[in-house]
Image 1 (cartoon, rainbow, N blue to C red):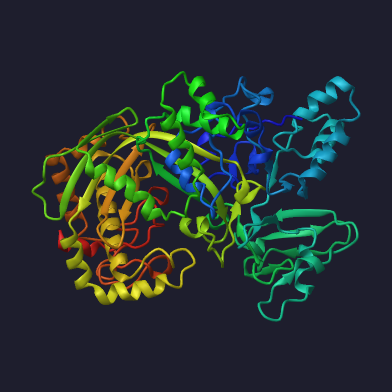
Image 2: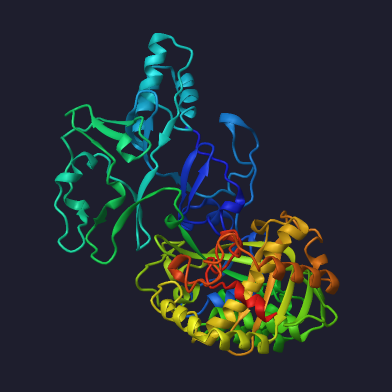
Length: 606
């Protein structure tokens, strides 16, 4: 049987992809397995060619509460097929990830038979066992994508031309707030109305859920109705049946009173929220290169002396430099919050008038005669590193809560079974360009003073949110974030009209604290619209002024006005003020704040 499926490398690390994610492909839906099951990690992790250089990020992740044993960031595999069709194989069999079919329950749209993946595979092997070894081996490879062995056997006996009926994976699955995922127990579904429920929340106990009979033989039929009542499951052994009506109103228990399973459509956003850490690469202050730093780390693990390292590096660095680097690397790293980590980037961009480093090129623009904009920087080249540290289901959580070990209501899962003791994390490096700007504190403060009561109301809601409750120190901090975030959305949406760059090709990186950091970087990476000089060209003072003026003018109106403009809370968790999909919200992968904390009334202060 063929075991290769081609998946784009961008679905290995991203806003909707990574370890634990469900990936839709032409051959079916698969779930990406933990890193230790990847052949790529096993074979390539120590190859310098596949390692990511960002020691500042590694140091942050290596905190005692984060990943204290972290050695290396490994880039996501990039591979191609050396052939097409059923004989497709990877060009490099060692540069492959590991995945498995999920959901495992599949049905045939021709004969309606409904079974798990392993039952289908066993039936297929039995069906082709009648052939000689050569033909059987060939037929075994035809099973992917999964096919119905009932229809294949019948068509072979009747000598019909069409023998292959591809199976369809069921659309409904179960997810838990502790990050677990499983199939709905369809072999028990027919009896769900007969099961006892938990007295407190009405959850069905999965451990005590009985089957309809001793040997269920299920059929899955989609009727003429568009709702769940039109889908039925029938047992050919005992002739009992049940529709899927009521499927989404159920919760299930599995011995954990805190975390319950609920049923969702497999394509639902709530199935998967990756916990990503992003870093804007800064040229390091040490004169020891990233590659040589990794060599020193490896020698240190083997107990090599500084004299040995000095000789191996052929005197490129003094022994004192090597010693200082080792001491700084061995020092225990305290937990660093996201705002503190970004402040280094913010200050680097402001303290230097220009940078010509190969991986970070920028230049400050002349002062603008624009109200509220203090600094404008054209970033011609940047490197963004994205690392997946874990993932959640049902609800996302803030990365600070995860790395600080403070998550409670939602339990995150790690990308490796080694959890926080893993030595390797998966990441991706992307090069691009962008526009960086800062906003006057005086302008922001006027907005905060004018809208204090509204901001205090939003801040109270923030305190009850498992995702945001630890993000802001008070309503003033929240107000600063809303101002910067909304202006960033104004500009990103205007770039759609002004230059033709869709927001899905743009990203934002916000720099906001409760004191004196108030800026944003709008960027795009290679392969996206605007990534070949188009975006950075808009950082010229006259063009940026036109862009901002048009953005503020367009923000006057919304199709949902006057309701939208005078809103006191809307969107998910009512975390937005005057902001909805008709005016300020953008593509989900482009916004790092889940399209929350927005208010287009800030335009009145610019």
